[in-house]
Length: 185
Picture (spheres, one colour):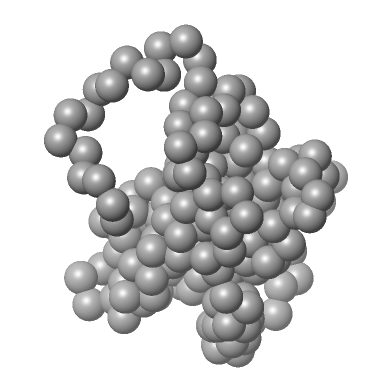
């Protein structure tokens, strides 16, 4: 990282624009900044999830790595023309999804967010991930070429968060909350 921030407020964004990583200014309401903001919110939600995990939970390092990956993704979007993510990250998420899912029963019903505090926080992160993905899709459609790998990463990450939430809900003898339609009750 080049210059360290010694003064947090700069007043340079008071008129509705912000700086990108390459000394370029852009509107705070741009699709690029919306995507960066949603990715930042996702990162914060994953940090919130980590705080609810049992102390001995062995996926804390994985979640920490995901937070670093998301920070890289935000950096990639803040520096037009740069790619900071690698395809191996998508493959790692797929491998993790398969590993976690192998220990879960097949889905027969829809699942409601809940089951435990950690599972509910994981579902919250999943929904924010889906929003970040939608923001990135909108941005990608407005710019050519788009950040295709970043879009794939967020798509896989939301799947990872889904199976991880299922695992968390079942931890320590817990259970998932299954949806019950009014028509089936």
